Image 1 (cartoon, rainbow, N blue to C red):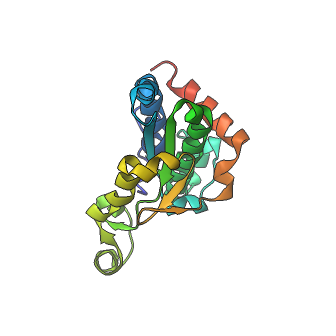
Image 2: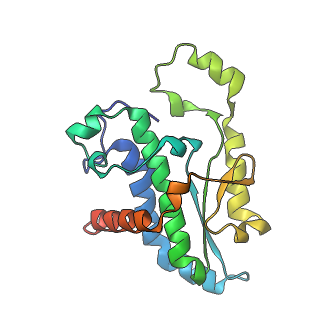
Amino acid sequence: MAPPIEQVTAQGYDLQFGTNFLGHYYLTTLLLPALLAGAKSSADGKARVVNTSSMAHIAGALDYNTFKDSPKRKKSSTMNLYNQSKFANIVFSNELARRFGDQGIVSTALHPGILSSDLQRHMKIPGLELIKSMFLYPTPQGALTQLYAGTSAEGIEFNGKYLIPWARIGTAAAATNDPQQARQLWEWAEEQVANI
């Protein structure tokens, strides 16, 4: 979260966008044939994909001029870039639900909770360690909502849903459910990974 602005992926993408969104998109699309086959052969006819987002998505929006290293990206705050990557996770998760829900894919996005972890290591906030110890939840607790979405019997009903701590259905920002924006992001990501 919020690494130095100079850090980019080997391919020149913003480090957070490449890690939090584009890598997840690529892995999921590589696994789609297996997921679809798994859905056909499973007893409930479902295969689940759980995308970890964040409540920070609320402050996010997609700015294609910041996905790769650029002057505009360098002028952005690293927190805005983080928020954008988590916004993209939900947009992608919702589009996956739209495209493949009728074929048994259950795509869910979620906020795991505000956790005390090494994720905040780059943040320069006075008293951060004290704040973490007093107000943030233990890291293992962050797995509860993912496990619920991925393994509970109720989870097969969560296609296109956004979950919040601890294992509850929540509401994502309305803009994350814009089908036109989702198609555009999907097509952009498809082009980016086409030659990998």
